[in-house]
Amino acid sequence: MSNINYYTKEGLQNLKDELEHLKKVERPRISEQIAEARDKGDLSENAEYDAAKEAQGLLEMKISKLEDTLANARVLDSSKVDTSKVMVLSTVKIKNVATKAEMSYTLVSESESDLRSGKISINSPIGKGLMGKQKGEVAEIQVPSGKMQFEIIDISFG
Image 1 (cartoon, rainbow, N blue to C red):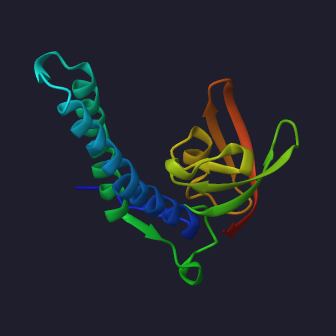
Image 2: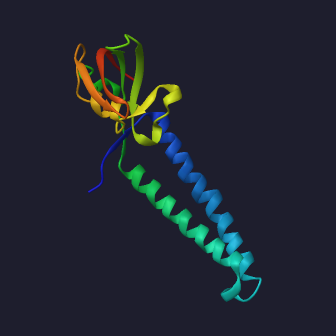
Image 3: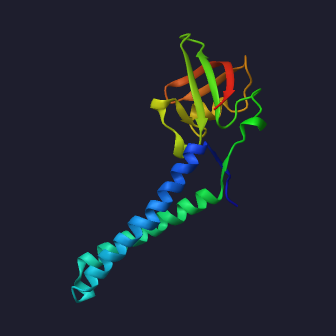
């Protein structure tokens, strides 16, 4: 059984674009490399042929994985989102209880996470620790440097 992963519209479109590129650009390019290497003669001692076949196998595996991901991908409908608790695609404003520093993060799937743009994975220690919490609650989260406490200041969608 596969897990359903939730994405933003942009994140889902990026996955679709990548899959299309792999199928329409990379797959024909590797097929060409295999054909060129095959034309060079004896396949038993043809390193180019072996390398092209290996690249083809890796590409097909990547395409298959992307197709599986897309088959289980969903975009959340913002009109049906419960903002009373933290969930995937929630934007959470939190305050570090010890330092009083405030920050905002959007919880996204692993493939969309990008700390520089404030997107953290729901599978990260902080993401897991915030999931299901409500505004005003304090989440105690085990991070590599020890335990940290974050107060949930606000929860919104997107």
